[in-house]
Amino acid sequence: MVKSAFFVLALAGSAASASDKLPASPLMGDVTRAQFMERAAQRFALQDKNGDGVLSVAEKEANLAKLAGVMQQAGKPVPERMSQLKPSRETTRAQFMARQEALFSRLDKNGDGVIGESERLDIKANLEKRAMEAAQ
Image 1: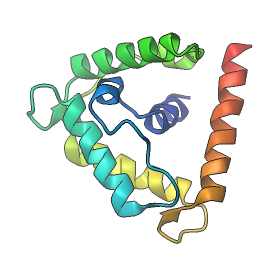
Image 2: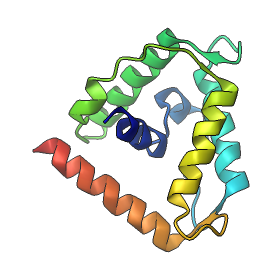
Image 3: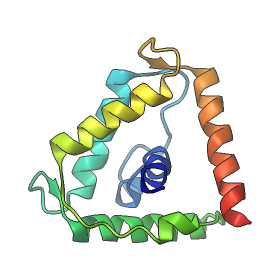
């Protein structure tokens, strides 16, 4: 359950703190592994408020709270499982990036190194389904 919640967070931007500093438009069209990982590195840097290369429990809690606020302002339901997340460990940059690599591999269903339009549509449909389930 926690893994799927983190999956949702990663897809949603993974970091509310990054929402006001990343480019306004999301990556559109085909997304290569390099583009995905570059955006992940940007998100990590923005979440790591003190720049020590580690996401502390406090930094994670602040980012989760901000993401929930952004979702509420947008009129989107905050999944119950997300509100129940309680970070308990620090995450190093290497750990974060390894998780992002694994996430990209899961999203790249055909293994061609690119998240194409059909894969993006599948991701969107899955997120919408989860949001509907959370709202019930």
